[in-house]
Each structure stands twice: as C-alpha cells, then as structure tokens.
Amino acid sequence: HVAFSGSFDGTLRVWRVDATCGSLRCTARVDVGGKVLSLEAASRAQELYVGSARGEIFVFDVTGVDEGVVPQRIAAFEAHAGMDVRAIAMAESEHQRVIFTAGGDACVKAWRAGSNAAAPLATLTGHGNPVRALALAHHHQLLFSGASDATIRVWFVGGLTGAGAGEPSCLHILRGHKDTIWSLICDRYFLYSGSADATVRVWSIRQGAAMLEMPEMAAVLEGHQDVVWTIGQMPSCESDSRALLLSGSADCTVAAWAWD
Image 1 (cartoon, rainbow, N blue to C red):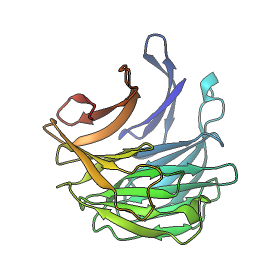
Image 2 (image 1 turned 180 degrees about the horizontal axis):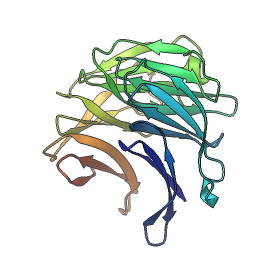
Image 3 (image 1 turned 30 degrees about the horizontal axis):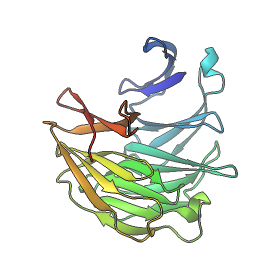
C-alpha cells in the first residue's frame, strides 16, 4: 500500500504503508517548487495531480512507486491564474478521464486529464468567494463544490465526464453552514461537509432520487471547537455495517460520528 502527501514546504512525499502495524515509511521525496495544497491520483493512468498555491497543476508519473521508483513530473499547466488550487477531483471511466479543479478565483474548471491539458473543457462560475472543496457523486454525474461563501453548489457534469448528456449547469445551492466549507466527501447516500463554523453537516443524496431533487440536510454534527479541515470514512465494527464518519479539526481532535 502506498500513500502520497504534499506540504507547504514545497515537497511531495511517497509513503509505504505497513497494513499489519499501521506504520508509514517515506520512500521518496520530490521538490515540487511551491506550496502543495491539493492532491488527486488517477489509478487507471498511474498519474498524480498536484495543486499549488500559485494556481498551477503539476502532473507526476507515479508508475512503480510501490517498488521505490521516484515520481517524475511529466507536465504542468496554469489552472487558476495565480490563485491557489485547494481541491482536485477526478472522474475516471474506461474511455476518458476528466479532472475538476477548485480555485481561489471562485471558479471550478474541468480539464481533460493527461499531460497535454491546454484549455479547460468548462468553467463553472457562481460562487462568490474562493472554492475550497470538491466531491463527485452518482457515477460522476454530479459535482459538489464548497466555498468561502458558506454555500455548496450542486452541478450536473455528466456531459463532461461521459456519464450523461447535456451542458454543465448548477442544479442547487445548499445553505446552512455559517463559514467557509473546507471539506466534502460523499457516498451512495449522503454528502458530508466540514466547515470553519466547527460543524459537520450531512445531506441526503440517496441514489434513485430524481437528479433535480434538492438534497435535504439530514444531520448537524456538533462537538468540534474550531475549523473542520478534513473528513473521512471507515467501516464500522457494528453489526449493521454502517460507515463511521471521521472529522479532523483545528482544535487538535479527531471525532468519530455515527447517527440513525
């Protein structure tokens, strides 16, 4: 097992994960040349996309990293005109790969993945402040974007990813958070959002619902005392096999959540 990390120190690191004891060992270090703010891996192409504080996307070939091979930079392009790239989301299918980037210019952009991205496939506008988080859902038909304007926008992107037909469009705007949204993840049933208002909110997006139906807020998880930077999931040990939600905060705690 291999993990990647990027840092404000301008480096990208590769870690070998020992699943038996949970330890990590750094096997490679690469100087990216600027603060690293976001990472996204393309499993089908053995590529890693790195978002920088200067608005650039760097593409690395990560073939063989599980055997100690050092990642090699194969491309770079300007995505957000000098503004930070805080999130990257990848839509992969058998026939095409599309990446979405979230920028400090309040835009989300879609790009053809690979080493020759020249111009965006689309630019999604509407947020009033920098976009900080992205998540894909419903077989890559929907994209969620969270921003410093405290809103989440729901976009139809099936025509871009090959999962549907039609031009990209904003379907809904989700309101409820009081501050910047820093993290988004989703599964088959729910979208989870973490915010600088110190809450995690749960939104119902059950499969089978009409795509134009407004997601409903299912829960507000309170307990953190500071910004919720990141959210993750892990299988539960309970008999009903519910996934546990994990949230990491600037209050120096990690919380595990389950709800009915």
